[in-house]
Length: 230
Picture (cartoon, helix red, strand yellow):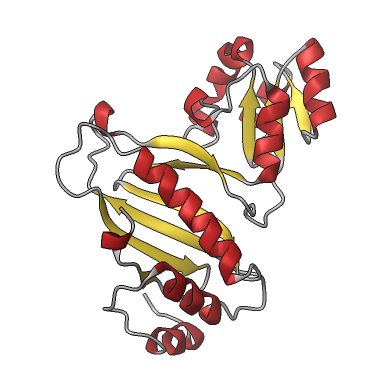
């Protein structure tokens, strides 16, 4: 994979083989985020879990204290009073069965998070093939299947992110923007890593956090010293 000149220069600016403390890693990643747009700072956490086993799955959500810096568009599947409640709480889109063909046939996906009341999951289930692969299916563990739609929407707007293992047992999550202060990014990271440590499966034998890398959208990854994160 050919890298741009800017990426190559940034990669030379620090020792890629070194394992850094959180604060130092954040400082390096911020310095290397020099694109013309406000880059997203991300964490990539390689775990020792085997997601093929149900008892080693990791999935949950956490509210980052400083949010992600991204405007999140929320779609809520609800009816009657709950639909009114969702609109009042600030959801961009609210609907029921009538949204199925729009998403299924027209490919409408102008939303970032989907929330549903439990009674609507039969309807939402019909969209599994579309929403599932994109990580958009509502899930009780993530707090997106709930009767308390107001709290769900408020948490999402405040900076709630979902974390889960991908097929290679890595968790990929946004931590904020390059325009955030180092302190804000460090706060967000500590909140995230605290939640992921708590989510460690009891069935896991061996090392939990294999590697943790921080990176910006266009910049090289900086590896953290995982011994200090447990």
